[in-house]
Image (cartoon, rainbow, N blue to C red; front, side, top):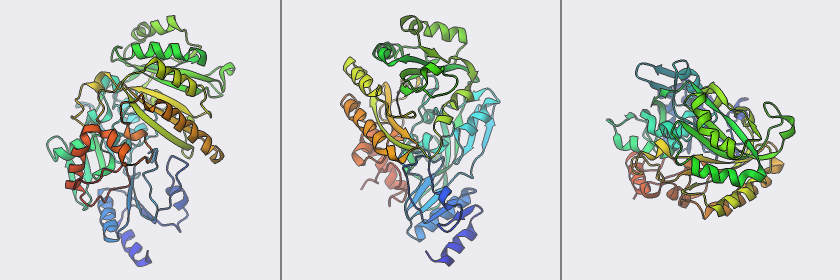
Length: 458
């Protein structure tokens, strides 16, 4: 691209414009998944909404492909594109809490750790994920599944409004009262409809939770899973817990005898008192006493950041996922077979419960088309060494292929790599046609296409 064109664009921005010749380019083009190695032509680190508008218009005028980067955690690395323009929202990073109304407004470049820190001071929390370095934007636009899902619903169930820049560079607000069709679409429809520069959420009274992992030996995994499938579907909504296969990290708080041992676990989060939590969880302690547990009262941000150190930026990652409506004995046998073979320290399988408050909206109330599912499963192959890329990829694929026929026909969009239009359509189920129609209204040329893409309806 000609230097004078780039210079004119740079002059329009309050933020930084990074080119391949700049010393910061190598770092700026990276996303969380270390397997992604894309080389954009330009990276606009937008300081405000005006920068986003200028970036969209510049890309249109110069026929550049555009990707939108918030936190950069997307499994498929969809925050960056080859030879195009990355609209990087990371400088738009702020949180404002209205404690009287329990309303939180945060910038499109914020991370969930920012939100957790700001809301915790007021004894509040917004339902989000399980890693505090995750971007607010990507997690929200895909649905938002985590520790508070059973108690307060998905992140999208707590979204009140969003400020957006559309494909033509114009600004608008999406809410139940303004552009309500667009508001419906962004609550699970991903980044297909525009650039969200700020989010407004309903927060809830959460300060100290009773939480942490309980671990069992692999030989007990089938029994623990069978207990778990019965317990979690009828447990009080104050209690959540996701099931995992894992390798025990070699450090505290885990005893040395368990270091690097393959085990299964449930990572709990209980919003009630410790006495209430212990009473609710007494049956599993009696039935299969954990070989290790790190369970007790803790500030909610401590739980949210508990696994951050295991998953720093730059690790090689490969994800596969599905929704599940049940967990049969046959499926459990397959889980144990593949789960006991987790290939590396950071590789894992998680089964997240999505019942409780997440079941209260109808499947058509938001684009999340599988409200009748009970679990969202994800197989994640992870390792720092590129030499192990095939190892982690093959394990994830083989595990997923073995369980796929037991699935509900779609997957959580935030757990998917780039897997093609059929998988995207399945993820949205009966809501796909409505999403495609809204896409045609707000982005008829499919300008925003570096995402889990929903093509505009004809």
